[in-house]
Image 1 (tube, helix red, strand yellow):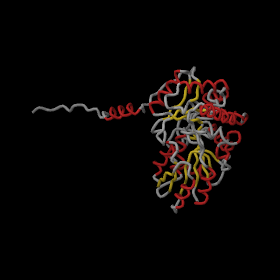
Image 2 (cartoon, one colour):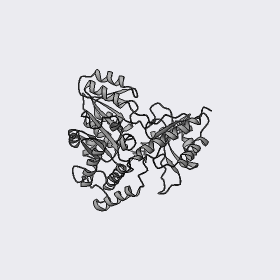
Image 3 (tube, helix red, strand yellow):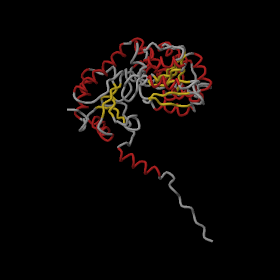
Image 4 (cartoon, one colour):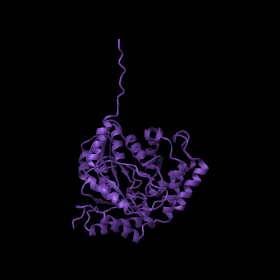
Length: 390
């Protein structure tokens, strides 16, 4: 009897079709390793205050690594909590105006932790349609009843909350990463108070940019430290480091320590990142004018770009979004900018909720006037057909 040897099958053959579809739609993403020292003018990173390479930030990282080692060595509940972590938490809570804080390995993990730990089956989670992917994923993992409301629509939020009789929370970005527009936090908070819901705000793009001395959007709105308010933030943008934090009432933070899987089962933030973030935070306290400067730079970028005929969203913080005619045009535009010496972000579906591709420019407090003029000139010279109204 002849035995047939099974022929090996490519179990990932389906990926070939997915790749072809991405190529045809102009949605292929690639990694571009950057050198330690780049000649490009950077308007793509989230280093809003220019602190990632500041001598004090770097020194904070180095000293922490030398003292505590390269890694946290375990989860925060085992060996991953050092005295440095608790010091950073105390200072973050004090700076942002909250009772307590909990540091995690990333801003993504912070959102997962907050949303999942504060909800369960039967909870209503209301989510703004413009929210970041980490909030969306937190909602998916929460096992709660999730309702997505139109972007920036407090009345829709109020009506949605009013139709639910149990535990509820509203989760929103403070500043949305696609267009850089700010959420109507005061109106959202009022809706939550009226309906007995908690308010969870991702202030990743507000910390270091908005509020007195960069204390964040919640501080600016008078909501920092309010009993029903929880904030998440990232340490990787204005503070130039890495990691995330949840801030709120002390009992909320204790609850996360005991129930948030994204905290309990994750290795603690590396000491070097904690040390760098703490050094940047202390620098921001001493130099609060950095927050105002980054807003000034964003406003100037917007004014110059729109005066030249480009369509851009008016920035409420540091993000300046410039619309492109198509996904492929946006990709080519960003590549042409890079070849001309300017690094800009490129947002295409599925990263943009409205399906409109964009260039994303991020203002930095350390940009000079000449660099702003150079950046705008490069964007204009490389603009594809259909990008301007002139």
